[in-house]
Length: 116
Length: 113
Image 1: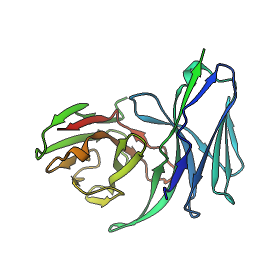
Image 2: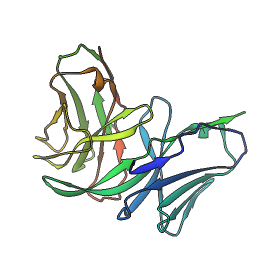
Image 3: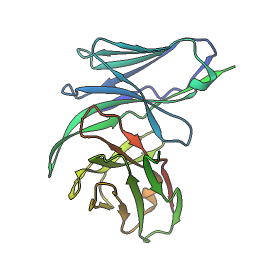
């Protein structure tokens, strides 16, 4: 079972639509959660962190449900420029030879295309 | 603002050849890492380092070596390339806070024939 699972999509939505992405994670000890955005053939970039109380950044809202080990991202009033792959990211602890370190584990991403 | 710089951006190798992907960051980040990204697999951690002189294995370390002689540089070596190593490689760094943002290089697209 993957540590972080996402619906790969693709999601094709018209401009102005509201779209929601979901993500589940398997490690209940995970402490930090993020959404990254990756444009085609580019590097991932941080979109927003996800806090227990939920958080909003403009048209983007992130929610965390620790009991269900579930994270969501809601995009309202979609723009053409929102077309990208959205990566769910969870911070888990790996035990290595140099001690333990928290690592970011990435979901495989959900592809969004906003259509004119 | 250079951030994380990776070279080369593109490389084609024959099976059995060796090469080094270079990564440098100018943000004085202690933590650096290498990921590979394959279709449908997401980004998978190859090796990471929490500071100069310290390296450790990630999820998919086989076939790759790393070293961290300075804070700035974290090269990834393929000793004997295999077609299964055809992928896009990303170097990334962050500060010591585990909740810190991970900054990525632009990626290196490697094809092994």
